[in-house]
Image (cartoon, rainbow, N blue to C red; front, side, top):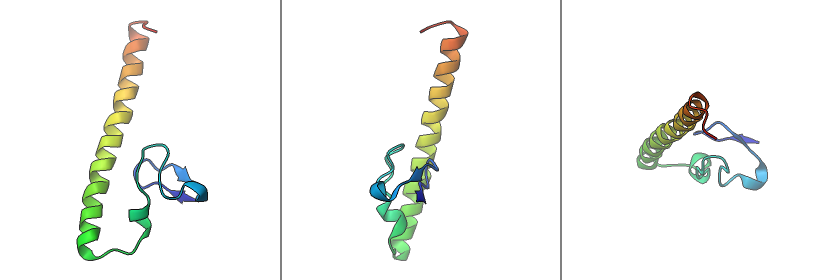
Length: 72
């Protein structure tokens, strides 16, 4: 079992190439990289984490607003 570096979901061995929760491509995370590839990977990872956190917070905010205004 591996852990997604973006959303921290555990990934089974059958799906080790792709996180089914956030869509992160795990192949980059597990392969050997040159310095340039490592820098590029870190930038992509930072963007993916920021986007994932924004998505999660937006969903939570939307649920809170629906509950507050009794919208189904």
